[in-house]
Length: 179
Length: 437
Image (cartoon, rainbow over all chains, first blue to last red; front, side, top):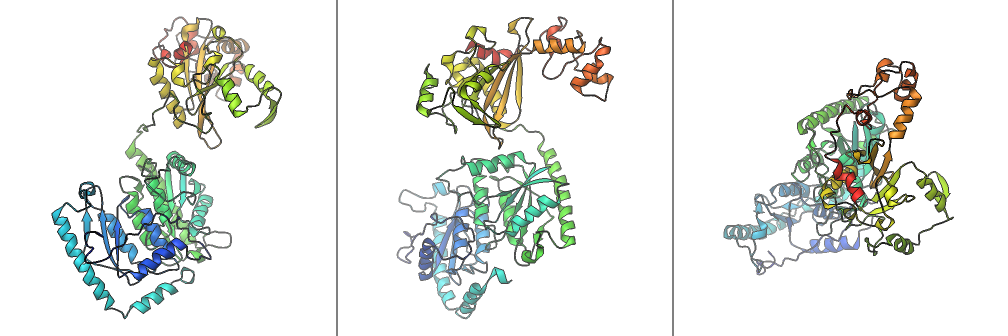
């Protein structure tokens, strides 16, 4: 996507495999590797999350990153997010994406996920040519459309400023101890 | 019923751990629950396979051995914690201990929801083909407001909750039994054995030719092994190496140790090859098991070790009839396990049990009766109140018709000419083989 849409958007790929297993530490100060991700997400207009499917759900690594990115930091609040996924089989990470959309609704994430725009890429091993281009024409066309919409979706979300402050405040005040 | 309880929370202080500990303590009449933490298991990474590491293998063994599993999950971001998901990914990658395993999901959370969404996600994850567990349907147990739910002794305060939990567990037990019926007694698919010992166990001495005639000397030098009058602390006692040798050599049987890597590493050498019931030569020590047996026997040897390693059998016995009518030679292969039940090798002990049988008959005044090989003990039939051995001696007065034919012996078969020897087909396989070595 970064390559294919380079004229429309700058997409920087972030890897999340360097984070330790989330263990809900007490007296926590944000880890430098987490802060780096937070800064990049906060500076971005939107986020595209690509998830595989392991055991009918998003990977532990992604789940882990989201746990760190919602513990004392709130980069996803009000952030436009587009979910895509690829899988070896024919289902294209369908179940993982549904779980991920639910996860992104959690009180400390509160992302603005783009609705009704499911993009499932099955048979991913055969889906790309040597240059990394998508070989399935119908899929490429569908992705083009969804991505165009996502750019508009980002603009729309930017026009909905009324609740953002309240959302950020709610996320920050969200304290499991005080429920 | 043996269950394993997995604490899904990675936190040091966890109400889910408390909940499992409460279950383990308060429902002992129903289940035997071992609570396990998973905070020592790294994040799943398919390119850095750590399936073989001890924390994952430990979990694997415990789940395999259990009748069922209880998972207590917190809820993070409306789903299961990454640490728990990670464990399930390890347990659905190269190994699949949860396959066809009945699983009860419970959860505790700080607020009202009591992990409702995390439990639904967990259910979906457990039912994926890689995990393949049977998640117990219905009977949701959601413990909300966990902070107020326990008293200072970590007991659940609300009697209604305690009773409900009991009813859930009772139903889960029945569910486990039903699942076992659905699955039947499928033989587990066991890992193949490598009789060439090309792997590496925790105690494998590397860098020495296993086929070298002086493997023992070379290995002793490399490991700086102690010998002679040096004391060694054992459980329970202290002996010098010499004492240990003499002690093992005084055992009324031939002892052989092959380690978990299928390498022949010891026998109680005090007799020359030709005088032994199962001949061994000092130069053979160090050899892989494949070199100790002819090719034709490998399949049977591998089968026995596989069963022992998996704990399917404790001891495999076979009689070797090639020593003439005066002897009854039994080869026993006993799996050697450490305190955690981990397989560390096989103890093959070879004995002529005929003198023991003769002595027993002489002491009890019984004699073997030909033809009756149905394994009915006259001793216990005559007196229900006594056990095997002592009953026999009390029974000495009416000596005539006692037949002792237990699992080990088949003794009566061998001593009575009326019964043909029928069980020799498999003999060459394992033990005859070691004689050829």
